[in-house]
Length: 67
Picture 1: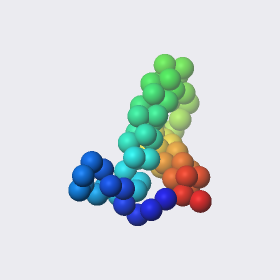
Picture 2: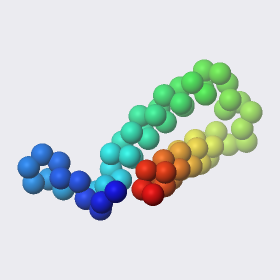
Picture 3: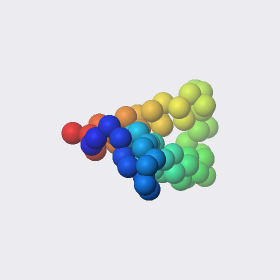
């Protein structure tokens, strides 16, 4: 994937921005499902678990797509 993406006529956005937006949307859905199931009751620090889950998901997807 290139460093920049031409968005509309002259707006250049970083190449990871579409991946970040997609991961945020996917993370919101995954967070709702995990909260509904009750996974966060079994974690030591739910906020830290959420941040680590998003970091792992974003880095995994961006590494997979930027091969």
